[in-house]
Length: 251
Ligand SMILES: NC(=O)c1ccc[n+]([C@@H]2O[C@H](COP(=O)([O-])OP(=O)(O)OC[C@H]3O[C@@H](n4cnc5c(N)ncnc54)[C@H](OP(=O)(O)O)[C@@H]3O)[C@@H](O)[C@H]2O)c1
Image (cartoon, rainbow, N blue to C red; front, side, top):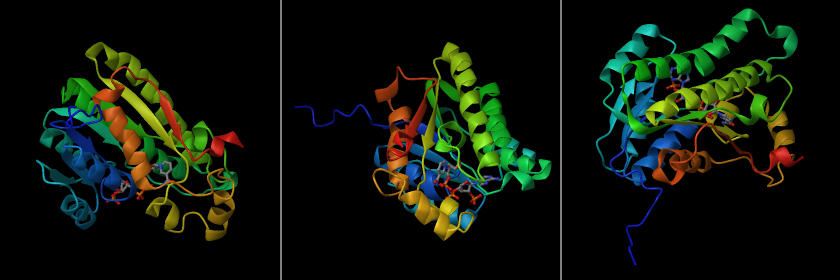
C-alpha cells in the first residue's frame, strides 16, 4: 500500500491567502500548511498575521500586511508575489443594516472590501501572469445572498452574490489558461466576523436553532473545502458555488 497517496495534498504548491489574520483565512492557512503548501498570507493587522505565521507547519511561508482597499497596497502586494498555484480570497467584512439605512456610502464600504478589492486583486495577478497554468482560485462567498435571505443582510448578501456571479465569468475565461475558479458559500461560522457584535447575541441564538445540525460551522470545516478546491482532487471542478451550511438550506 502506498502510504503517501493523498489526492488532497498541497505539497509544493504556493498559495496566496487573503484575510489570513483571522477566522476562516487563518484556519485555511494553518490546515494548508499541514498538507505541504508554501503560503503567502495577508491581512491588515500585522500582529495577528504574525500570530497566524507562528501557527503554520514549517515551510516557505511569508506574511505581507496589506489593506486590500488601498490601491497602492494592492499594487505593492502584487509586485511582491511569486508564481502562484492557488489563491484563496477570504478577506471580508459584515454589517447588519436594515434596508432604510442602506445608503450609497454603506453600499460602497461593504462592496469595496467584499467585492471591488477582491476583483481588483485577481485582475492584477492575472494581468501580471502570477497564477500558473493549472492553478486554482477559491473565493469565500457566502450562503447569505446566494442561498439565504436574512433580515439586515442586504448589502453584504448583494456583494457576495456579485462575487459568486463574477467567479463564474472568471471561471469561463480563465479555463483557457487551465486555471479553475470556484466559490464557497458558508453558512454561519464561528469567527470574529459574527462574534464581534455586528450580529446581536439574541439574533445568533435564534439563527443557530434553525440549523438542522444545531450548530454553526467551525473555521477548519471551511478550510477543508478550500483544500479540496486547491488540490488536484478537484481538477475537473470549476465555476461552482459550493454551499457548506450544516443543512440550513433544507428548511
Ligand atoms: N463567519 C461567517 O459566518 C461567514 C459566513 C459566510 C462567509 N464568510 C466570509 O468568510 C470570509 C472570512 O470571514 P471570517 O468569518 O473569517 O471573518 P474575520 O475573522 O473577521 O476575518 C476577516 C479577514 O478579512 C481581513 N480583511 C478585512 N478587511 C480587509 C482589508 N481592507 N484588507 C485586507 N484584509 C482585510 C481581516 O484582516 P485584518 O483585520 O487583519 O485586516 C481578516 O483577516 C469573509 O469574506 C466573510 O464574508 C464568513
